[in-house]
Image 1 (cartoon, rainbow, N blue to C red):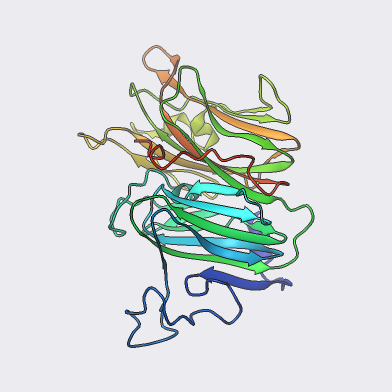
Image 2 (tube, one colour; image 1 turned 90 degrees about the vertical axis):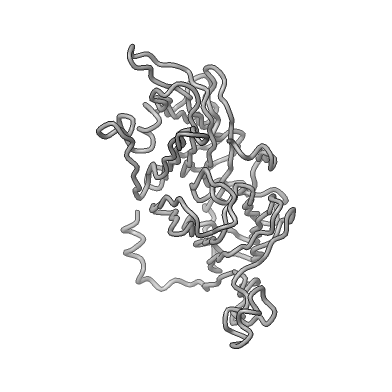
Length: 363
């Protein structure tokens, strides 16, 4: 797939390239960098217009700020965000003038980057690199995505600041204006979380989707509770097109779904990894005092093996452990959060399942 894309770089397409950021909030042709009254005007006071007068926006607490408002037809081709992170910066993408978003997700989790703590110091660590085909997080927490997101009439992108502090928002959204094929689906992403699973309860990654589409990715964030045994025996299950008790696709274990094997254990320690389509890129272990929960972040992109559905889809994960000695499965009580990514013929999510700002923090 990537080689096919690279082999097409020499093709001259009939499209117009544009970008939206604080230096060109409307994305208009020939209007980049012309601000005289941006947030950094004091820094540019000796150089004047055209010299980085408006590199960011300041978003006040409680405000849902419009980052981009674009008339189509066109396609979002990449997005970059920098600066501070918080799970209570909520990213939303609205397609075709719909009042309900097609994407609703905490900002870092949308980029498969979990377990972020609010900080006033953007230079602080720790930092966990993520290098994949469609998402990259680079030092220090520069978040990039390359999911293609087509729209036919209109696209609006917002970010809501649900914290109590001002949010200094650095971003750039690159898009193009072009005709969109009739069979192109709308990009969707939805965040869910559950703190403390019940006995024999399966974690729901995605549910309530009706229509035709293709499931293209999972970001999973797991926080362990209880005994320190292996936690990832749980199977990923894809219920497709009115599946009832049993799914059409059933995996063999959590680390198996994310491309690993045998607990990611090498010589008695967990081994992190990044790949084009899958990875376990973040591991947080006890500091020996107060921060004692072992936590993981993982991603799996179905770029070459999308899971297609015609009527509906539901995706779940068992919270299942392994007891040593004894060789016995055991139901666990772990914390999970996740982002599901898919394309669909509908332009909006069926409903919001986003927790409020207080519930958002799992720990």
